[in-house]
Length: 334
Image (cartoon, rainbow, N blue to C red):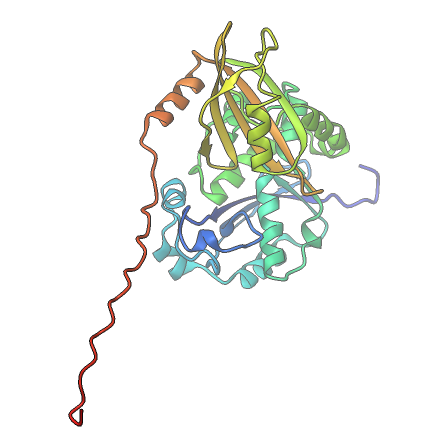
């Protein structure tokens, strides 16, 4: 760093957020957020140093007030605790921004946390210009380790660097602390300088974790919506990776995070599992990451188990019976 230039602090950020239970009244709300923040965890990482001071806060939800059971199970956050310890979102942001200070660089493990933060700031009519200086630490890690474009889990990266986890997983501060330990092993100045290239390599590669048995991976751009994606990957893009001939597609099964999977069949080369993930881009079209797995892979067996489970169907509402008109009561003067 040149003489006279003050080094910036890095703020390693992680959050936990709530999502409505599918089919609930909250899920039917047309809100421009993918999740409502429940917990903020952050660790300050001075330039060239290790983890320093920490920040943690619970946030009272305003829109999705009932915490999803899966979120409770994953994070351990209970409604009673949020009611007792949480603060309103505006107050939480004021405390967090004051703690961060000015001239900081935000680092997150993945793309989701910063997107959720910006969405929550927007729905509360709060400025987001102070979180614009942000980088995805996953891309820096990939660029400075194995050069892959895969999205690695935080635990995988810790194991790759030989770092023993010492905090609770799926806790905002715990995950932020572990991310800070990884970032302390990286050349962050170099990572920022090379970020555009790492981001382009990621864009040209694949955004999603790959499991054993993967036969092909590819990224598609410009899809209109979910229906367009499912039709395309059941139709003209559904070809055998060996012979290139069309394959038949089975039932699509929905998974969390805009993910979908189906089994496809080539008459000559057998079955393959198709897994896709949709992500909305700035022009409001969708990017689709597609993975193709061998029919004997564990990923394919997971599909078979999911397909074997009975489908949950919403009970049909019976139309209300029309009540027969009450017979007229004769009046006394008749």
